[in-house]
Image 1 (cartoon, rainbow, N blue to C red):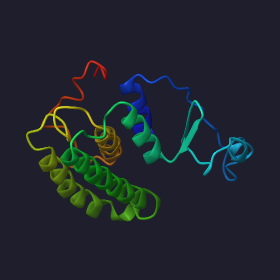
Image 2: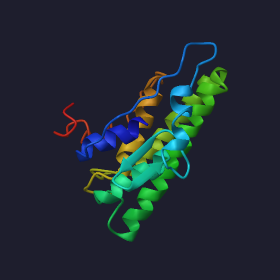
Image 3: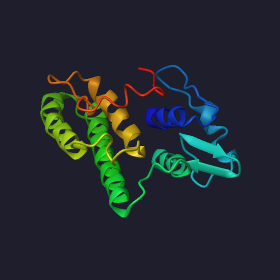
Image 4: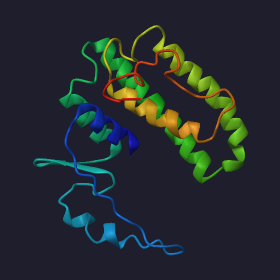
Length: 178
């Protein structure tokens, strides 16, 4: 959900972050969430969720797309929209590989890191000489990729994994302040 937070902060949308706390091991009591989840009036109660007026949205990608559409961050031309769709799914594939590694197969870290370098080169090639993935404007993909870049950095790949290494635009943005 860090990509949702990044996008909300970037757009300046006001939000209230509600965190549900699990109990201690070994039971990890989740009643703080399970006691309320079906009382929130959502079609598919899940975390994260976003309430915006009468709209109640669950699923990270649906929340991301909703916020991005409000701010015209899903591409303007058909070609830009296609780039947004393709890159979103590539970022989700990268996320799924990371989840599988960390939850199921940590012993496959060397192979994951080897494949990661190839995958990140593809992202870099996709960026090409553009200022941003979709052209001259920030798109929703920036935030998908930044969160994956961060999670990948936790594994310390030998050659780094800064997707934006070539551009540096995001980190120099006054909205980000890095």
